[in-house]
Each structure stands twice: as C-alpha cells, then as structure tokens.
Amino acid sequence: MSTILSLRDIWVEYGDKIVLERVNLDVAAGSFVSIIGPSGAGKSSLLRLILGQEAPTRGRILLDDMPLTPECGPDRGVVFQRYSVFPHLSVLRNTMFGLECAQAPLTARLFGQRRRAAEEEAAEMLRAVGLGDSLHLYPAQMSGGMQQRLAIAQALLKRPRILLLDEPFGALDPGIRSDMHALITRLWHDYALTIVMVTHDIREAFSLGTRVLALDKRRHDPHAPHRFGATAVYDLPLRPRTPPPASDDAAAA
Amino acid sequence: MRWVNRQMRRNDRIVLGSVPVALLALVYLIAAVRRHAADPTDKILPLPDAMVRAMTALVTQPDPLSGQLLFWGDTLASLQRLGLGLGIATVAALLVGLVLGVLPPVRATFGPLVTGIAVIPPIALLPMLFIALGLGETAKVALIVIGIAPVMVRDIAAHVAALPREQIIKAQTLGASSWQIMIRVALPQAMPRLLQAMRLALGPAWVFLISAEAIASDIGLGYRIFLVRRYLAMDVIIPYVAWIALLAITMDAAFVFLSRRLFPWAHGGGH
Image (cartoon, rainbow over all chains, first blue to last red; front, side, top):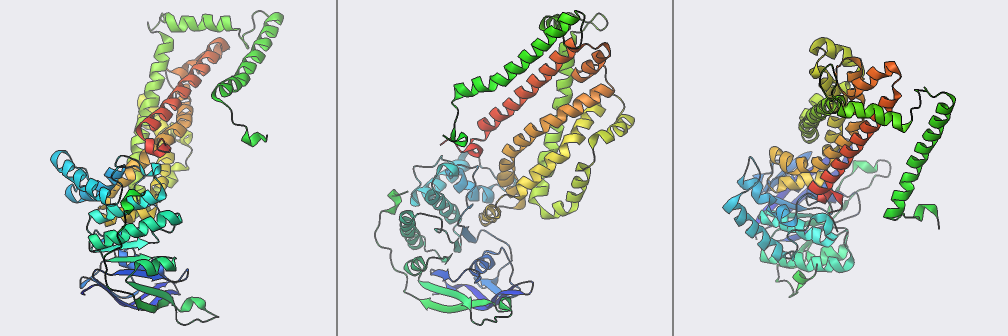
C-alpha cells in the first residue's frame, strides 16, 4: 500500500534532554499503527509531532509527500484521553463545529438550509458511533465512553487523512473499553481510516493494530540518562487489513 | 454523627440562617431602648419608629428645594452610576480578557500593562479623575471602571488561558482559525466566569461608588449618607445602609439566576 506519512531521521530535544532520536517511520495508508512503550519514552511527543503541535528539532515529516507545517490542521484528526469535546456545546453542535468552521469563516455559525444540511450530516455520523439518541445532551451529562464516541465522531466528520488517538480509552471501564475497541475497528474499516494510536495497554495495541511500534531507549547512560533518546526498538507488522468481527456495539453506550 | 456530615434541609437552613439576623436586631433594639430610657432625645441608636418617620419623609414627600422624592432620586442616580461602571468594565473585561487569554503575542505585549494598572489603588487616582474629567458623572463612573476592570480583565484572561490545551488543539484539527476559536470556543466558556467576575466586582464597585459620591456629588445614596452624617441622623443612615445591602443582595441573586439560566452546561448540566 502507498505511504501516507513518513518520518525521516526525526530528533526531538528539550534543552539538553533528548526525547526521540533517529526515528524513521513510514505509515501505509489504511494501516492501524499502535505505539507502545514505557512512560517517558516519547510516545506522546511522537504523536504531537505528527499532529503538528510541535516541530522536530531535526528531521523531516512528510504527509502525502508534502512537508508538514508545524501547526495542527484539519487533515489530521485527534482524540485525546480527556478534554477532546467542548463542554458548552450539545452533542450535535459539538459535531457540527468542524463543518461550521469550514463553511462560515467569519461567524463560524450556519443558518437555514446549510445549517439543516450540516445537522443532518452530523446526526448521521453520530448514529454511526452510537450516539443517535443523545444529540441534545451536553458532554457533562454523558459517561466517559460516550464523550469519547463524540470526540471520534467530531474528528471523523472532517474526513482526516490520519486519525491520531492519544490513549483514547485509558480512562474508561474495561467493559466500555471493549465496546470502544469494537467501534473503532468498525469505523476504521468502514471509513478506510489510517490510525496512529498511542496506548499503555499492550493487549489493546496488539488486538487493534495492524502494526505495533515499541518505543524505548536503545542505549542507556547511567550518568546522564537524559542524553539518549528513544526510538522504535520493535516494529512488528501483524496482519493485513481484515474486516472486523461482526458486533453490535452501536447499541451499547 | 460528625458535623461535617450534617446536611441541612432547606427549611432548616432558612430557620438557622435567620437566627443570627434576628439576634442582631434584638440586641440593637435592647440597646436602643435602654439608651432612650436614659435620654429620650438620643440620636445614636434610633428606635424603629424614628427610622420609619424619617424614611417616610424621604420616600414619599418631595424635597421642597428640588421637588424630587429624595430616596428614589438617590437610588436611581446611584444605580445608574453603578450600572454604567459595571457595564463598561464588563465589556472591557470580556474583550481585553478574551484577546489576552487566547492570543499569546497580545498577552506578551499588554499583559504587563494590565498587571501594572491593576496594582494602582483606584482611590489614589480619584483626584486625577476629578481634575481631568470634572466633578460630574463621568469621573464617578470612571472611578468604578478603573477600580474593577483590571481585576476582571485579569480574571477572564487567566480563565481563558487555562482552558485545556487539548480543546484548542482539537478545534484546530477541526479547521478552526484563531478568530473562530476565540468566538466559538473561548468566548462561550468565558461567559459564566464573566458573570462570576461581575458578582465579585459588585462589592468593590459599591465601595468606589460610595467613595466618589461622598467626595463630590449632589445626589446619590452615598452622598445622602455622608450629608446627613453632619446631623448625626442615624435614623436615615441605618435604613440607607440596609437598602444598599438589599440592592446588592438582589443583584447578586440575579447574577446567579442568570448564570444558571443562560449557561446550564456550566452548572453540572442538570443531570
């Protein structure tokens, strides 16, 4: 498959602390890359690089063979562990936000016909993530799992080239988490997504991913532990894209 | 049961809350009666009937000089100054606070200036205001604005700057520009905090209003209190102070009501 994202000899340094060193990575379109590693191994730094929240100290990042500007944009969607949804907007308005920003640069609000079209599109996406009955709730009225479903729907509506997940299910109960696993697998398949997910949960990494990347330090200097950065120590291709197991996760919230 | 776990029912809370107020009134009455027993012409602790008599004249009978009902004229003038000052300060806090909070370059440029203005004691500026703006309404309103706006600006700016970074990032991945983030993400979430800031600013606003009226004015609640002080007219001063307290409590309650009504998502969302 074609490469959608490539990282070329990436270094990330904060002062004299080296977080990532010599990271080379090609992400194929349609793959589901899980990134695991111990705390402080630069998993989230790597995600922030791809997201554009930070620029690498050295190296190049290419998205669709174009150099990536170090700023977030609608071509990369993201779901964080928390705070990914807007607390002051209802579920429907949260999901419409991306459409409103694109279609109304000045007011960021839609009216009349265009508003109804956006509402319909948002509602359809919400039904796809299992929130079809919660359109008018506020995030504070929903469980953590429902909030993450909303965050996913928000991101998917913009049809991002890559969906970035930063420990998206880390704060959820085990039962809810397996529902969410089924959901993200189904969405990944239905929408032909390319996903990069950072997780602490090794089982999750292997059960969801088509490829697992383990970040860690190759070398360790006991006198100056901060001078060696982490890189991909294992890069395990697991399996090609397969249809997800049949499941009815949309009913569970 | 431990005291930290004793939750009070609504009725009990009303009864308990009124006990200290009633006690205070009782203590005052006893002291006033005892003073009047010793000296029937005492003016320091007037009895309720004297207060009613003094206030009836102010509330219902036009002043022979100006033809005005003094009590209502005072109330209207003071509320107008307070409302103007609070309104201007609120608009300034929203605009400046929002921009300072959302845009780091603006924060770097104007943050120190706002902090600098905020630490100046506003009363110290009052002579300057009187010299520059004259003794009219402008100087009084300006004192209130200068007194409360910097604190409100800093509060809103800090609140907006403390919005989770994830939200701002998320908005950008949904295609939002700086402007769109400002009006759709930061502004709505600053609104409940703005009402909170207005509640907190009400106290200082009254202080600056009464100060300005005490020094140079010809009408207003603060002016009347400081005027009748010359005649030891406690029978006017005490009801006026009580009236000011009542007005302040009403405004505070109105802000709480508005906030719950307009921003239900900020109050637990009504589970």
